[in-house]
Image: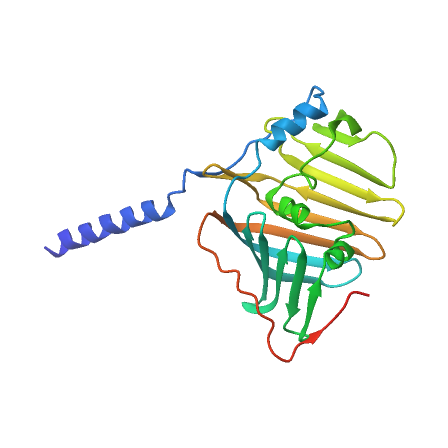
Length: 264
């Protein structure tokens, strides 16, 4: 009898392990393909737009690193909560403890810093200063979703070519701002984009290593942002878990006693 019980227990344990280790078939890395023949800018962008997300909410749990060149590397957890086209909440934690929070709406940027007990309430100029390029709500949302910074690009202003296995779209004429985009061939997934502001002597390079399919949704696995202006900063965001259309909490309230700061 004891032997039978042991066999039954062993069988249940094995089944539990098999079920527990089984991967969700609806989540998988997306295969990519090198470009060998040139496509028009219109065709590349039309194919890229098919990856655009139609959802109500998105929650991204990520592990991030931040470094100013010559400075220390800082590691932290970053939770990104998106209510499509309306709000983005950023929650930063260090060693499990909340250290900062930001609420971004189409017309306002707010954040508070628990370490220095300060808060900011203003426009997007603070994000533009940090990232080294003009940023608005739509651009920031597109960065997190792996879409080109500007949703509506005039294809007549771009020339297309193949560069190191990627479709390269670049500005036809040198102006105060030039843009370059790189896409893989199979699904026109964005691999890299570079925005250069010549007059302000600053630029930003946003790179995407790979992408994942979560049900019908496409998301980056990792984002790297390299911003160069007076200082060079490197921000790396690795997506640990992404979910769509769940209930979200966009609670934001500045703790009492914090000092308001302004942008210099």
